[in-house]
Length: 336
Image 1: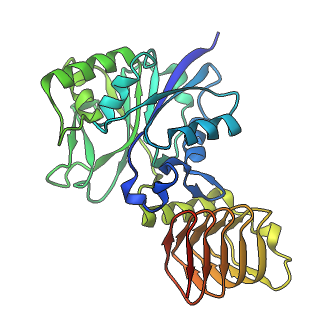
Image 2: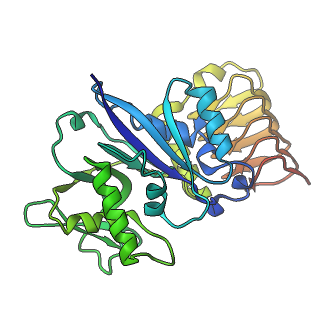
């Protein structure tokens, strides 16, 4: 009989750093390299052993109904629970709202970061918990894991003052017991351990570490971010280079130059266009008399008579004229 593993993904934030796009859709549904960010988030769990039955727990906020519809349309056989977080009081608060589902072994991942990791080892893992980390040259903007004498985690430190410990937390965690995590969150809240009114998961883990639990690190090399426009474009580039390029399908279009890597929906109309490198274009869009490079273009968007680069364009956007760098949300129009 398969063992259920809960996969908890908090995604209730306002997405302020990705506006204007998040006025009309949640950040996890931003398009990137031919899919949505959420699709790539779910891909991270494909390597779970066959002995685990995946059960997702999404903690949603505004536009949560769009997340539910996306799952119904694209993952009808996936078991998923939805919990609404109305007040933005942090990650631990979000998990506590979902406590009835946070039982048994569980994974937690953030909805705006992507990693590459192999989860097959969890089939025989006996530790109490694990934090995925990536060594970086300067960790002072992040949280880090401080290791004890035997290589297990001694404590987690938010925004360290020096660069001696560079094992940065990437926002991906494993807990052998969801109940133990919930108990630690209850203690965290009782102590009032928060920052600017928000309860962070690192503080709950530190409560667990006070009982000398066996918490370890898992080192990775690839850590991608979709939290702001600049890093979203960088992640788009990486995914196009490594997974999503379909430039061969458009190689023989008359009057069109394709510079790989790109991911272009088969319904896109291209006329007198140069597209690429590093371009994603959604369904039913049209590029005419234009050059587009290092950009993400949404569905049903029309770009005409310009050079467009380093841009994020939402759905149903119309742009015409000599314009270069753009960040435009859904249903926008700009003519110059």
